Image (tube, rainbow over all chains, first blue to last red; front, side, top):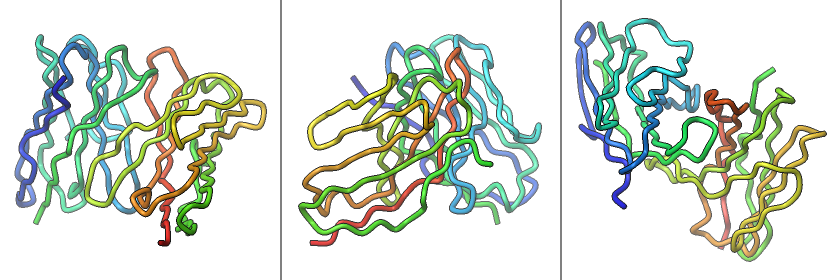
Amino acid sequence: KAGVTQTPRYLIKTRGQQVTLSCSPISGHRSVSWYQQTPGQGLQFLFEYFSETQRNKGNFPGRFSGRQFSNSRSEMNVSTLELGDSALYLCASSDTGGAYEQYFGPGTRLTVT
Amino acid sequence: QKEVEQNSGPLSVPEGAIASLNCTYSDRVSQSFFWYRQYSGKSPELIMSIYSNGDKEDGRFTAQLNKASQYVSLLIRDSQPSDSATYLCAVNKGGYQKVTFGTGTKLQVIP
């Protein structure tokens, strides 16, 4: 099976702009979770989507949002970018949801200037 | 108190030795436990999952879970320089709740 794919791999944006990141899970997996990884905070959970519904949400401001499509592909959007949003954004797919094994994509490196 | 705690390291072990990585968690209802390996500049890779008390072995890796003491550990036998990476412990409370990650332990295997 093909693994989790994320696009784009690298992104440079300026403060105030918005950005959309995409994630395609492993075929057959219906759960997609998004994480933000920074050197200081480690892996922080953003949200999880399962069958097009947001099932869990982390402690991030409303500027961070996401959605999932009927083919399980997911997007996350960050509006009004801040310098502190610079991070590696990872998505992980699972076939049964957050209780089970998650498989990560390569990530999108976002730099906000 | 953090939900999942790990010593940040670095933990240095000589090649061929056993590396022991530890993780403690705060919520007694936690049900699922995972170890991920993350090489520098790469994404985390699942290497072990464990759900019940005791040991689980997979090749050179052994995961150990003690729910009464709320800790989970990962042993790497015959450590190789290629095992040098950051190891992340992750915990889930079950019932489709989110997975919480520790900040990771950096392992260095010295040739």
